[in-house]
Image (tube, rainbow, N blue to C red; front, side, top):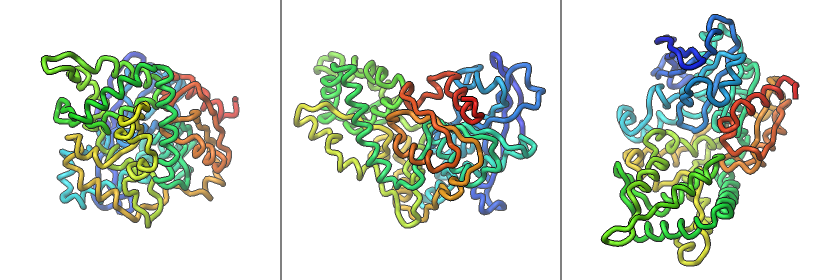
Length: 436
């Protein structure tokens, strides 16, 4: 471990840490990669021997959130913890994974082999590798948001001795569901979120259809070379899983067109805002390994599950929708082959993505027997009708983990741990301590 330097923000003291870990933990003497993590402690408490809380961000493929001062749940955490914001392997300031760096690995096949080491199992092994040097060997509390909750569930399955408590927000995965089953459950939820959006903003029905019809005739070139198709436009539905997402989508749609000498055209401002929402330039790993996080059968590839399952839900077929008078349905947290042809951040990685989709040999991520005998205090916030993680899957898992306590709420969407400020973390801590 190397520590760069310590600096301050309002109410906090921050310290940068860098760690060297094996790419493949089964080969500790092999290639190594770098991890970055930011330690945060309340101002004035830096000398104290505080217990540690590890935060695992959602994704996959996103670095830990860059807080300013004591924002969101951090306000509550800093009252008693020293917090570690880990950039999971391949994200943030850890050894990067993107179209620029992956060619260093060699061929697409070699790139795909490399990326097979970027799932929850490797992330938990990373956490266990760095924990002793930070805590002196003491276990820590882990807070996992979304995919971070998937990682936390794997932690409970494989290294519970490293945990004082496990806190999960919007991220209790099915222990057994295949990628196909995940998306079969997802598309009806996504449709419900669409209908709720249009009930709130009925004027958006015509707006979305008009934009889709325009793109069906003439896909748009976005700044930076991104090509916007109807399917790409539909993927703006990923916004509908957040607490303010419906409102953000509405404001995005309301001023899409401007008059030009050649007739109405999609405005530069609209296209730039769409590019900012849809580009994977900042998180390409999300697109590359997203379906792999659900792969647990060594004999079965994911094989573009979201794309295949979508074919069985014709309501999401924009061509059929535009031929009739139904509202256009936006999609959600789904990755499709066309992402790797329309997004310049992903296009050079298309063959690599195809190889990952065809890959077999994935290993199970969760141990139901060990979870059934769990002794670590666990609490999970389960968001009612969460668009990203199926509520029924989460509750089934909750019943399978010994001692796990749930807080099921419709007060928040998937981003409740951020939108809810200190309250969500405070509630989960109360649950694991039997104070609520």
